[in-house]
Image (cartoon, rainbow, N blue to C red; front, side, top):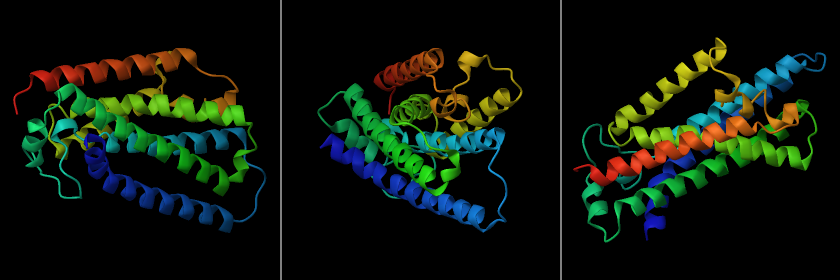
Length: 237
């Protein structure tokens, strides 16, 4: 029941992302094909394109994280402030708050993985100029992108414990913009840079896996998730 309830809470957001990203990918591909023919893209151009495609996956992770126990019953009608009416029903279920958060976060992570897999494949099909890659490199790219974007997923889940839904998405995107600015100014140490492994430093480009960065991403995800559970268990609703 809890898995089905979580699916009902995420299906409309997932459908919206599918529609939006499909439109953006197709329009971008059509514009590229209609442009005058030119020489093969340079490595820096391919790297820029790869970094640009990483951003939608992070935005999807932030969006699909939902609001944990406070998640409404589904649809596009989110309450601007305070708790949604379904929160009291959710809390009345004979299960622990830890399990509620765990199942809801698992469903959102599966949704995020589906978005990453499908739209990465679509991008490779629509933009063949990115080049041919081996199966191992593609699987490594999926894994690295999913692990790095999961950090923002659990960050958004953590923000939901003390922010209204109307502020969670802007808050997550603001933090994302700040981290992007730090990345652009080269302030972040390489092992803390979880953006590049999804784009220009992807295994598709470097033919290697950034183990240190993945360790940092997994550790940050664990910290955000444990903090979320701790707050939810002690919070009064």
